[in-house]
Length: 620
Ligand code: RIB
Image 1: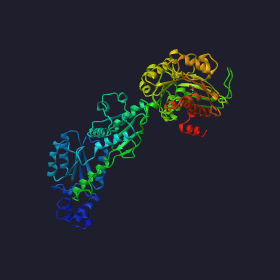
Image 2: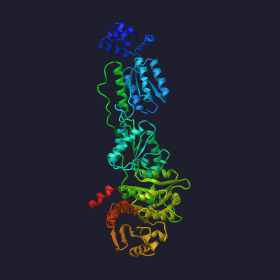
Image 3: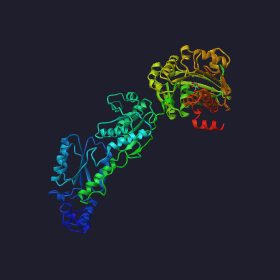
Image 4: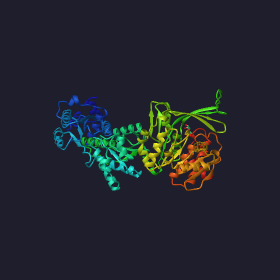
């Protein structure tokens, strides 16, 4: 393509084309100029050979000078794309220092760019604009962050804080970065919280880089974080996974990014999209309009409303309703048999399945399924079974921060023989459950402080049970204990138990009494606050200190597998008491939950959900 071809296509003389591409077109009609330039761009005509010795011509090249701190890839990408659409190429320059900036300006002038979009490195560097003027290069100066005419970064911080406060968060932390926008986001956060009368202690709530991230989150009692960058959000996300802290249930994260609405950052993280891309397009169009003397773009840049995307940020539930379970975690190997194997005999199983179980696991999942906030403290091996356990707990929304893994032993196992009448017998290999220490429990003190109830059983070491009961009482939580596999309990443990919940066999073994009335009297004398003795298909016996005892009948469900029935009962009883119900109403609720559990196979899958349970009870 030669200049002659361009002239022919445009229906003008070669000299007219020459004048236009050399910028000597003052006397040429606007339409003619536009028609010629359009053809030049469309046919990608590069007049370097023709103009290289001339004073100044069109290069269809733009410069974009940004700082290394301008980490907004979306701005740059859209600027380049827009320029390309208009037939321009872009030379992108990033300044680390003022010297870089001057070198880039000199180079762009030498290469005869048509225009430059430039964010001056500092106020002093604004003087360099003279170089562009001297070389007749059109210059669009980008406002510094915070100046009028650009993106309102403070508004992003404001919107992030508003989003979290609307979700009822009050413990909001901020993790900034080195970027020039970081302080502006903080200004917006500060402004929103101030206007909403929410205290913001910057010395505690703005992340001090040297601090241990999770220690800081716990110490400052934060439930939500605003991150100034994707890098910060990723860091927290990774740490949360290590700590088994669930996002957004336990910690909500809003990340201010240049991502488009609709692009998910990480699962559970809310993406607040700043309109960098739209701004890049606006700047490119404005510059090209000035170069081609077509006037300003139709309207000035208006910062689009910030778009929040990805995930809703759920605030943690009220601490009054939190239920903490400290107990065993197993893999249950359930074998369906006609009768349990006798010594020396070989029998065939009708059905066999292996699923996560254990009293601690069952109760924590049952609590979560009933809609309460549930956390578990326990120990698993570092093996394949533990992955199943973690997945199952996460799937049900149980807080697993207190579930640790140890290489020294395998995850516990329970071999459960279930007969046709639903009755079962169990052989337990405790495995890692017996590695749970008082130290592990103390490390989770925070969970006790946040709990209304602490549910305990005795399939973990007894000193761990006693320590957990003591810590729960010290932190103001009520305790429930299900004794299992225990021939005797320490006297000091009884005194720390508010609700003692054995089955008939356990009650008889521990008290040496045959009738529930006498058994309950024995335990109350030992110092427990109240007793519920679960009696299988008969129902249960309830008595608290200072009240008469009472029997409650069971709901009529056909028993398929009684394993886990007591766990369902205890979890539902705790959930209802935490809701503020009386013990009698809580027992009704728990009886029904246990009925559902025994009418289904297994333990975890047999636990009933709140909606089904309450619907059933309403119609019963
Ligand atoms: O209560 C039932 C549970 O007891 C089973 O899941 C088994 O693992 C044992 O801990």
